[in-house]
Length: 301
Ligand SMILES: [Zn+2]
Ligand SMILES: [Zn+2]
Image 1: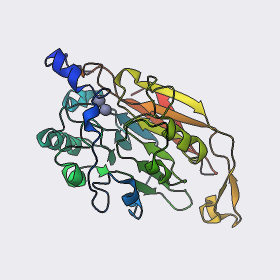
Image 2: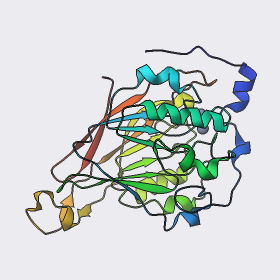
Image 3: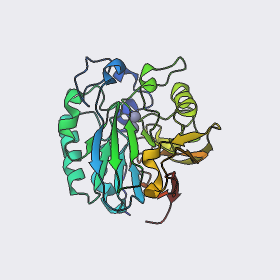
């Protein structure tokens, strides 16, 4: 497992620490489709991206906050079906950092790669064309990816948010997250066990009250809070539509025994001063006969 020594001037690193970089909260006019959605109202009508997946989805590799140290991580990244990067892949949001990250992504073997922006990229000069810059992954920004699986197996709905600072008073963007989301990605954490006490109450409220099928949440941003936390959901019952019935054996809607827990992952790889400090996090994914997705962390590579 390779590790890079801390680099750069410490004072500069402190200035760039994502937890205190409040100057990057500016708003930008949005564009269509999955780029440039700073105004959450513009997220309405963004069509989900769809990928047909053959075979099982059993391993998900999560990384975040690589801050341009991605190449030093290469040997630490296990093989998996999905690779998720939860933002802050550049140091200062420069295009050259983003392009190098994209080239590196192209060298990885994972069949599905998904990227969202962190605060270091969300106000960059190229952020409105981020989906073109990050061309070697599915780029999500207040938009969905639906993984369509073999007949009889429910699809996996993945949603990635734009970057937002924490809010106690609600955030319209979170109201746009589809209720059928199974995996939610957001650079900043909600209030949870891996938020370093800086999580967003509004995002947690949305997860608890609306996202009953969301069993996996992946974030970064609060570097020192890297880790995993399994937390109880609010009690609820979900009915799976008949078209998703397994084996086509019956056409009646059925109770979906949605997992009573959500696994919260803070996949930040950088330490407090943006030195490479933490490894990737590997998640095992299983699908029950009723179509319920269950996620569990693994230390095995
Ligand atoms: Zn960061
Ligand atoms: Zn950040």
